[in-house]
Image (cartoon, rainbow, N blue to C red):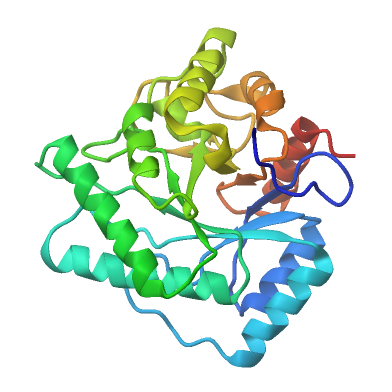
Length: 290
């Protein structure tokens, strides 16, 4: 049985973008309202610093109230420095930073925290997966939360990144506590990792691998991104929807698949007011939304 998120207010699937919090969380809601988003992703802290800034009670409360009134689905993306498979101070800082982000996400009533699975370095895959899972579990415990799910994201397989293969990605996800585990599927990463989303065969190969190793119950969000690089390149470079190597036809066919019904779609794409509107229009056109 596939667990799905509540449907979009106007029908179809929820669609949105990674949305800036510049000027504060309430400003972010204003941007989402102007764009007409019914889903969004945010950073709850600087994505390239360890430090977590303070959040005023009024700002947090205003965000929660505004989000409820808008019926806006929001997830967070953890900072890019997090690597719970790392060593020494990097691992310690990763666990502490992630625990703080989970705690803030729960305070803000977000749906999940998306996080990259990290890097194995020069260690074996089995050792790195074990270390990563232990670190994720420790971050969840340290956070003192009980609801937020940790959505582990597939990678493009670049360098020594974990989760380039679906089997390894699934192993990481299954290592988390059952009530806290989740998955985030990135289309550009899957394409760069060798799944050719331009073809029926490539899409079915990805869906079959997802069903076998990850499970549909775990999938809580799709990062809908086109790719600047070719299939199998193992290079993570996002492009505006329909303008990359996957292309409009492949992305539409993938996102229209019934197995993704009810899963919010979030674009993580180069900024620009016109481009934001075009990317959202593309997503809505793939989602059955009016």
